[in-house]
Amino acid sequence: EAAVTQSPRNKVTVTGGNVTLSCRQTNSHNYMYWYRQDTGHGLRLIHYSYGAGNLQIGDVPDGYKATRTTQEDFFLLLELASPSQTSLYFCASSDAEGARDTQYFGPGTRLLVL
Amino acid sequence: QEKVQQSPESLIVPEGAMSSLNCTFSNSASQSIWWYQQHPGKGPEALISIFSNGNKKEGRLTVYLNRASLHVSLHIRDSQPSDSAVYLCAVIITGNTGKLIFGLGTTLQVQP
Image 1 (cartoon, each protein chain N blue to C red):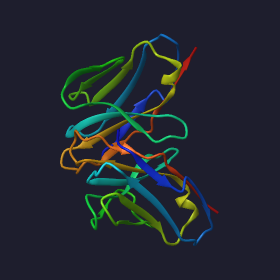
Image 2 (image 1 turned 60 degrees about the vertical axis):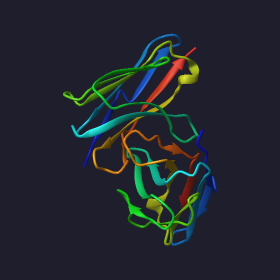
Image 3 (image 1 turned 135 degrees about the horizontal axis):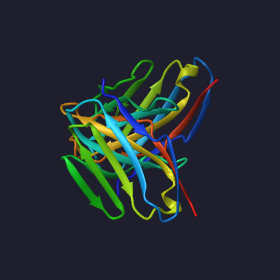
Image 4 (image 1 turned 180 degrees about the vertical axis):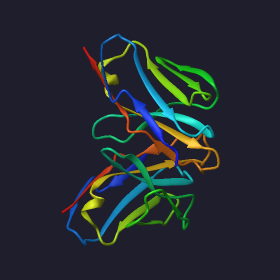
């Protein structure tokens, strides 16, 4: 079973604050993804990566940066947090990017921007 | 942009009944369709996927895909209270590098 962990699990910050969300997967998967989940919008892809040092833009990238430092670690950065970024954030990983490759999700980070 | 719509929004069934969930997608090039289960406070977990027209059965789950009508359904036989969760339909479009496009989900409640 793939293991994806996220930290912190809950985070409160103020408008304009700097936030880093962390994700680690322990199965040497090549692909890692950051999603946000909002009522009325569902899960939407922010950024993804297919290896250390690689970054691809997702569907809702504005206001977010991401960095993949190692095969295991993928970070999501909010450098000037805004209330619109209050959301539930999920990290996921998959071995490859094909249509038959399962994405395994972490437990999520709940972010509140005041 | 691919659209994935799910119905009903919520479903209540008695324990032991069949639960039927529906999903329509807008792009006939959708390469695969996935169903994920999400319990409160947890991340989504992949349940079952289908790539070809027809049906696929795994345990109590059966999925039917009809590409001509852009429709897929998930049926849970002998529903249990532990099946109570949000069910998310997601599609991957050909050439879209594994990007999942999710629907808003169906909330299933199985009453003992």
